[in-house]
Image (cartoon, rainbow, N blue to C red; front, side):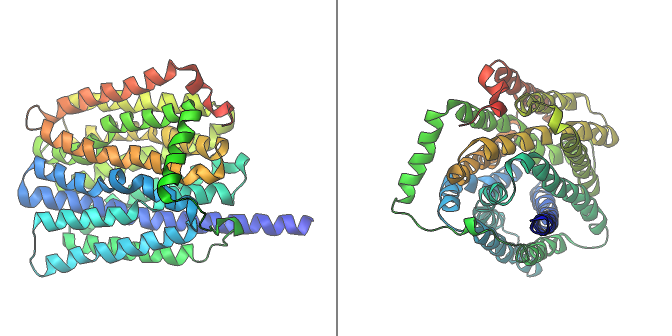
Length: 410
């Protein structure tokens, strides 16, 4: 029995290491891709509106296909959906550097490819989070999520910094190639993971539409989870647009910064998130995850509003580190609550709803920020959006079932 336990522990550590490595490599590619895409559009058009629209096209698939991706995750093999998602994104993104090599710089086509890449990407988050819940014990999920989250944050720390260095010696085209290669390396690592039998999904007699309605019906029966996801949607409407579109506009058009400055500010965001993830890992056993999540929303919004007074790039870097520290308190807590306290056969659909809230609202928020910047300075956009984000946490804290949501079973 002791030998079996030791083998299980070794296997679990190996799987965590492989997942961590795959996540870090693919997330580094994502960070570099996002930087390259937005800066490329802003550089050749000089338009905050077009930049916002391209960012919106890159995130719109979460609204259109996100819930359907969750249904697929609950019906089929979650592991193989993850591999398929990565492979499809690699094949899509490699088209961009080929276009640029031949001098094709049509913004509509770039936006379309960003849309297709993101469409395949919607499969990955619900499948991954549901796969983790199957693979590891419930009592270990907060720490496992914290560890795996650090891979993404470390990637977003090193990715933009690496992009800033590479931009000094290479073209933007090379950054898109790096993104495609990162997906292929991540696939190789994923294929080395031991797959639990429970991830082998069989089709059931219900239709995908019936499964979708069943997932929505679950929220009606368990309103606390529904309120949590609704707050996620509203909060990300205020938070994601400034992060995706507002930062490059602030750096280029108001602070007079370069692409490298933008990259290092993005790296500062990742450093803050990495510090926050380690803090959650270290102190999660002593804290109420529900209260931690709501406090993170308030912190997220308040620190954004401070960008109204940012005068220089170095000050922006310091402030973005503080802002980033609050993000893991939201993401890790929310993920662990769903993994721990909801049925496994609903995980794909519930996580797809969260993904809809995060990425789908990013699409709308990005377009909104780009438009609002034509009416008011970007600093004012940060200020008002930051207040809106903080209010989401305050409203959530006034609801007793949300404060104690991590103590309930649904």
